[in-house]
Length: 625
Image (cartoon, rainbow, N blue to C red; front, side, top):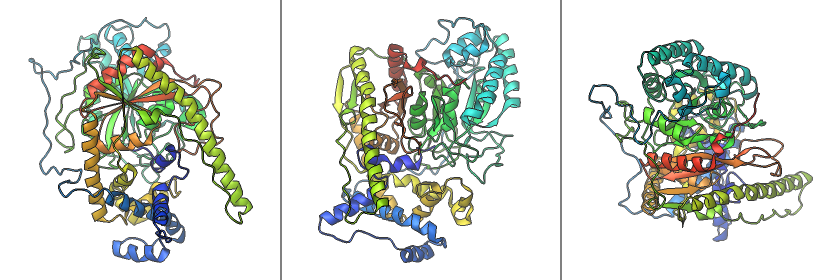
């Protein structure tokens, strides 16, 4: 549901800064530059006294050690927002809905739910009838439905094939938490009977899919990927699951996510990237992206709060759609941040993502954030009428590396750390230079397609200082986990992981939370103004600033494969620490991101489909057998 906190803290390093805790460090540096020789320091005594006031703790010496740096960083964020001098007229970026959400379902004249997808002919060119059902492992939803509705294949055969692949490949990928085999076989048989009888429910009818295991499915456990929740069950399906059931889709597995929607490490293992099994799949929609990439499901549902569709889609070379906030109801999904959580499809093409979003979008009468906006796909406009911009500075040459100088009386251990940091900075720049070739080629391709690209820049706002809103809401969502001490059951316990983040968030003042929300209003307003100039913005998937900005503002994003690195690509680090999605290495995919205005998700899908038809990068897939 979120880009893992590691990557949030790593946003600064994407801009050429070395540390992942730079907001607080930069604040301290700025204070020194202004003549203040005493940067803000948090002591154990301060934490102890504040913990008494907050009614939490007591904390161990190790926990307080982790918290000191995080609290100093958090304190630095306050001044970044205060420096905005927000006008009195600016309200916080949230709206309370005291009444139930409206529910609207469009009906055809005969009373049946309207499954027509405007602008796409569902039945068109047929895929050649395969001699082996496993030849369809990497087929798109559109291709599979063509075969299913003409009864060239059966849903039951397709379902058995995908389940067999999951069973065979999961030993390598660790993408499955729970197979829903019995449920799936029943659904597939019903789908075949209905299709044979001429009852077609739409383009997902009979298509096997996987759910990120933060979606509740009655009769099966919903673990949230976390220690302490391994046997958790709910007595109702998530709204998204209900809607996909109604569309005739076949749920075959609950797929992995990093614990409580952080990263790709869950309580059972670490989910792997099918292109390079030495690397994780990134997260937190780890299993969804990995399974789609490896041809183990027809499509999957993921979620994003701060990058959890974008990051694994980038790492695994699949197409992910993060919808406009409020487009898809989250009823029955784990809550991490009520003002930022979004559910969306991960699939093999932009067109597939559109077909899936059409099925799951719209209010359900339960999630008060769900918006009553109709979603209809349409053909891409003529190039002359679509206004396309790109975030210029993200495509510029990365800055030269500034080596960290040796400190006075440097110890051998300090020297080793400094040299490793300098080496890492040079290696990161080399990887960025290599990947930049693909991004520049994409801009050239769009120009060749007839689009005139307008250079743009993100509004100059302190996005990283506003982003702790996420952690504050997450700490509230998991309040009992922290107060009970059950956070010790979570697999990951580093300073960058949820247990420390939740503890630190207990000291986020209510006034500063409101002020950050007021600053978020500025983000929303200024991002909206940017989209008055263009319809689509082309962005680098590795640009942490746009990722944070658009998740705060609720704008939709489409993440697409943009080619494969060659054998000459810089080699990845020996250990994938989960901090960066661009480490890649030879023969791994690169990515591109398209952005659109609020509720212009259909425009985004159509534009992405046009790009994919012109490039075919989405047809590349890993060899995992």
